[in-house]
Each structure stands twice: as structure tokens, then as C-alpha cells.
Image (tube, rainbow, N blue to C red; front, side, top):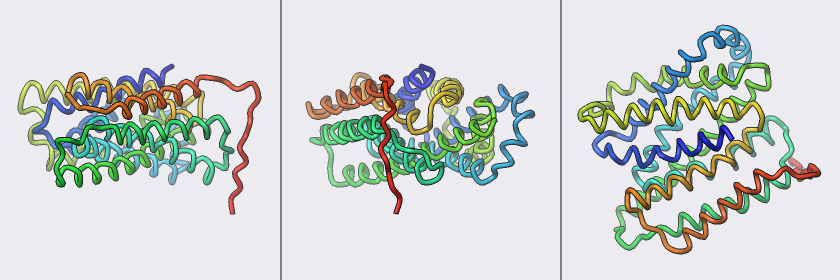
Length: 297
């Protein structure tokens, strides 16, 4: 439930960012994730003092997670700026479960469940239909090229999202508290993100709307959302957590249509239905744990 609520909050970020068109997508990403990271560190300072030695015992995992946190918002918000809120969010979040599953299989040596595989296939088809269902009638060649670049950046965002989710889960499994895990990764990433605002953050507070959007993004979706996400990782694997967050592009798509005015064809709504089915499958606990044997060469 915590991850579902977090996903709803994250689904509002693209629409919120659209109200600050004169602010660089790099600045929005760096400020929201950077300040969110600082707030997480302040909130979890006592637990961090207890757990920091455990985290530093796994430097490769910790640094991979922190680097992923730093790269993710830059790729994610730029993807939305180039390809649109709905498609940028959909691609970024929909590719994350695939990358998370690969990380867990290749590095953590965990089996891939049949239920996860089926729900992923359904979700992937839904995401494809949703992407194809966007009305392109007003797009020219330049905007289509932009959309292609946005989709590539969305895949990078999905990879880094899966990367820090997997890293956080590994730290939690080693005995680190979930709050310490998320705040440690985000706090380290903040050291990289916040200095970049010297070059990109000129218009963050140039108007009341820009200031409101910046503070909202940092406090609600980033700070509160990732507190909830870290709590949820106590109970489920990163691959399942990232699959549940497919609810985020649904929220983002609805808001993009209702508030921003992005248009989708019928095929796009069929994609929404399939993603909803994918989410429903993840809420069902199988009576028997069927495992899909994936043999590595």
C-alpha cells in the first residue's frame, strides 16, 4: 500500500513540472531530488548514525545506488520535457521492472516468478499501446525526433530507477533500516545534484508558480514519496516494487490528458487497461509459488 501511495504522488510530478516551462528540466530534477535527499537525511539522521558502517561495508552497491539516484531525475524530467508527460513517465517507469528483474537474476541470483513474468509481459504490451496511442497529428519531424530522444532518456531513467531500487533492497537485506538505506543513497546523490544548480537553476524561484512547483516537487513526491517507497521495500523485492509503480504512468497519463491537454487514441486507453490488469495481478498472492527456471549460459 505504501508503494501504491508513493506511485500516486510520483504520478503528479510531470503535470506539476509543466507549470514551470521556463525552468530547465535538469534544474527541476536536481532540486527536487537533491532537496528531497537532504530532507530524508535530516529525518533519518539517528538511524544513519547506527547504520552507516553497514552501508559502507558494501561500497560498490552503495555507490551504484547513489549514482543511479543522481542520474535518474536528470534523465526522467528531460524525457518528459522532450516526449511529453505521459510517454516520458510511461517509458521511464515501465522499463524499470525489466531492468530490476535482470539485476536480481544476474547479480542477486534470484529466480524470476512465473507471475512476475506474465504480469511484466502484459504490462509491457500495455505500455507499448499507450505509447503508440498518443495523437501525433500536430507533430512535425523535429518533434518526432525529440520524442525518440525522450524515449531513449526514459529507458536510461528506467535503468537507474531499477538500479537504486535494487541497491536499496540489497542494503535492507544486509540489515540496514529502510529509512537509512533510502536517505543514505539520496543524501549522497544530493552532494552531486545540488551543486549543479549553480549552472542550471536560474529560474527556480523567479516567480511564485516556479517556487511553488519546486518546493512541491521536493517535499511531496520526492521526500514523502521515497519515505513510503523505502518502507515498502522492507516487504517486497525491487522487481515487484518497480512493477507495482506502473500505477505512476497511469496517474501521469490521466493528469496529462485532463489538465495539460495531451491527446490519446482508443489504442492508448487499451494500454491503460492492460497496465491496470498488470497491477491487479501483482496484488494476487499465488497459492503455490511457481518459479520460472531461467538458466544462464
